[in-house]
Image (tube, rainbow, N blue to C red; front, side):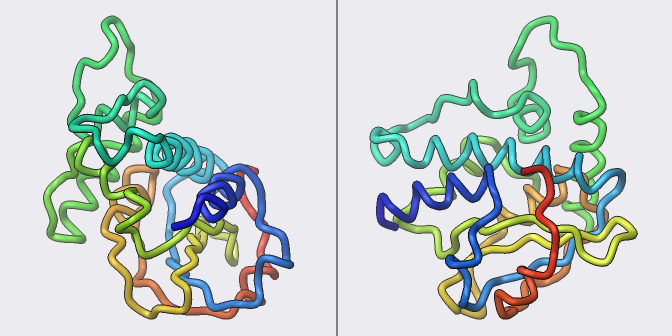
Length: 191
């Protein structure tokens, strides 16, 4: 991944990609969320922002352990970093994350991710997708997660499933390739 791609990806976490950036095939995950799609997207974007910033740090590749101060507490807690901040009271995002983690384990038949392991999957040299957007689909608690796979129909993205579920997904479909025009017809969430 080039420096420009990394900067562009970080921008897309905070704002909707421009339509000039489209004209390609995108990976789409259909996600049914519990609660507000806006709250879901807010949680998702806050964790992605922290992970992508860490992955772009010059010391990322040499680090044995990454700093986690910028990772939201609720995500760190559900990812095994318990007791991070003394006196911290759990909030509503903690309950959402815990429920999502249980659904992830059940649906994906995988173990919970540990925070450091999860963060290291964002290594720009080894990741085969770029973040694109999260949009509201047809309503009724359905959102779409969009990633740029450079047209590849299959990419390693288990870390996205963990993120999707712990942010409040009830179900996450398999990735499908879609033309960017479909994304253009949907409203971006939490930008």
